[in-house]
Length: 567
DNA sequence: GCCGTTTTCGGCCCGACTGTTTTCAGTCG
Image 1 (spheres, rainbow, N blue to C red):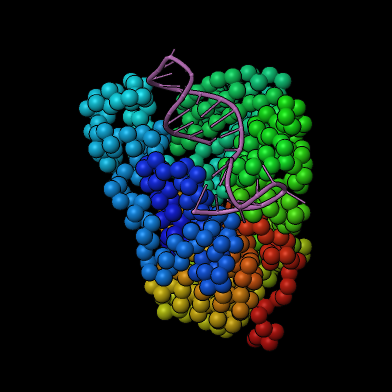
Image 2 (image 1 turned 90 degrees about the horizontal axis):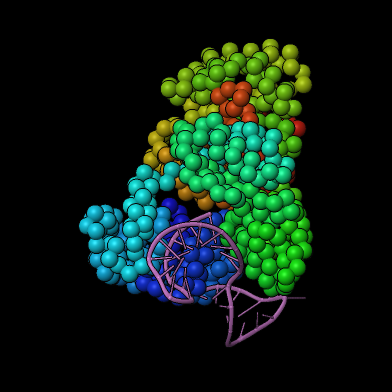
């Protein structure tokens, strides 16, 4: 955890604790807001403190700034101790159980000395709960189910697989809908999603719901009403919600169900202050409905340009829109090539011709074929001889594909001692050198990556944090230092678009831009089909507010070989 | 606790759903 995340976590826990204690809900919300803003902040909080800019952050006032300063100076926060006094850590965890809010937690704590999941389970089995005021049989039953759901774990699935699922469902429903779209975090291309939301409209709303609940892959219909249905789908038991609305409300509903919650709250505040009201049915001035058929109409009524879904996180996009200063986000059609593709020489599935063909089909002008280096045994890393052979074959295949430039590349390991896995004479024959950590995750990673950045032949650092969305939390790395050095040396950091990585993520990519670090998108594809992960990389870049000029993949290309006089 | 083309004080998004309730509290997104 970096300092931003540490402090965000403290504020989050303070909010939970204060809420259980019945503190003023607006104060509670102020802590939650501050926690969210800090966790999504692209600047290092330590730097902002030094510059005296803490209170310039939206949601951080003098009181929060003082607490941040106290924590950074002493490693402690008195307010945190105070807020949590008298509450056990296990008690805060109870808030995560579906159906369990602060009022319920507080009541169970006071009346039955419930302090943990185990205590809750004991009381659920004791029969004492039903006797509490406001409790009945159903409520107890819901808590029992909630505890079960919590224990199964709130598995979020990565964006890539979720997109595949939702697109298949949307396709199958499109025949009975006049308009249909994914909504929610999926439409904002958030890196993981907890459930899938779909919004649809059409002439026969009942029919859409009927079809939805009978789609192939539906395991269980959780709920089925006139405007909404929820199902669980195989194999992971992921929940999919469908909402249907009248055609006139489609835009307002799409805006509403796309979120984020924080974006919508700010938008509604803005609406109220300009004499409007927004809900999922439309935009209203008094009793009069003045818009809502399209999303553009919703924003236009508030004198805002359309805000792309990827930006709707309340990270300053509404303020920017008010000033007509939204960035011109990069799009898929700006992409001219892919920096990071594996062939059958290492652990990829396809040969050079197959990859070149796939690149041509995608309309790319170039493709960097980057296989693993020798010491990555588990991925059949190439020896120097293998690599030389591959370079020769690239020259041959290149003649058959005059329209797609095949860049000679390698994903070269940064060894535990900080050296690279190929000798310089070999690296100098490549067009693109990507350096990456695949071993020694806890061994001086920052120093090793910086050594790679300082190597004169390195162009890109692959997946800079090493995190995996489905598990691994990443290397111990001081990204701030790495970015500063990368900016000085003009070495690019990768936005690795492989579905399980998305590394750099949106927040870090935004930080990289602000420091002047070049950024390169690589799909890390291990087959032709995986070239389509480019979409995830572009989405990450868009969530980071990046434009065409911020991403090296938008350039036609560049240069051939590192040196001109290599024999 | 934050914030200001209504405000330095007095507000702070909005609606649906559920369950326990005789008019509403709690939770959720």
